[in-house]
Amino acid sequence: MTKEQGAVVEECYIVGSSGAMYLHKMGGYLHASLSDFAKEDVEAVYPVGEMRGSLINLVILKRGSSISLEKANLRGLLSVSRDEQEYVTLSRAAQLVTWHNEHRFCGRCGHQMKHHAVDLAKHCESCALVQYPRISPCIIVLVVDGDRCILARSPRFKPGVFSTLAGFIEAGETAESAVHREIKEEVGVDVKNVRYVESQSWPFPHSLMLGFFADYAGGELIPDGVEIEEANWYHRDAMPDLPPSFAISSTLIGHFLKGNV
Image (tube, rainbow, N blue to C red; front, side, top):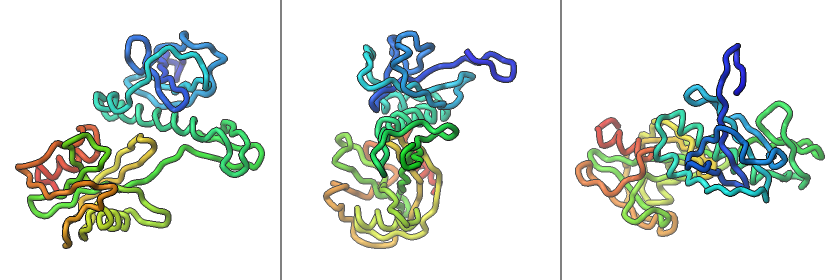
């Protein structure tokens, strides 16, 4: 418990270590207390936000700590998120767990990074480098042509599932340029009338997905055979298996199915 503007506010904790989050003994991801862990094992505490009246903190345990708990399945937790705030809370916590685990040492001089006194960041006492949580911007696009759209599948997808096209924005590139480049590289077609729809944090491991629609402008649909193993045109009344409902790809496809493009 903590006091905020005279009121007592409940605190809950998400527990992570070595890049993973851990469920409590009853199976949930929010821990009401840290009584199951030794104080000397706590390496860092990061504020995650507020959810349903409770303050949420991420507690990082040192590597090698004795943790007799089950690792959380992030996709499973996101799939049953009750609202946008819960999705944001899980996404932020997962990305901070990854960032803390992967940025222990300075990328410039190799010394151990310390917690920044003011910002949500780490700093190097040796060379003064400051490292903030990593965010990787990506574009994700539904290409449409009247009542049909392009959906594709990566070799990493579950069998039968098709989704929108996506890719990372390269250094010095605008999001709109990335849309044209990625679609051309992955499936060989040209697009026009690129228009932004919405964004979503995607904690696999630290992406920010910028969602777009784009109209088909020409070219033959040919998958690159590396990132995309199959791509097809699909009509609204004959869609394949689609991504989970919590993903922005599902949102884009949903707009298309309703005619809102």
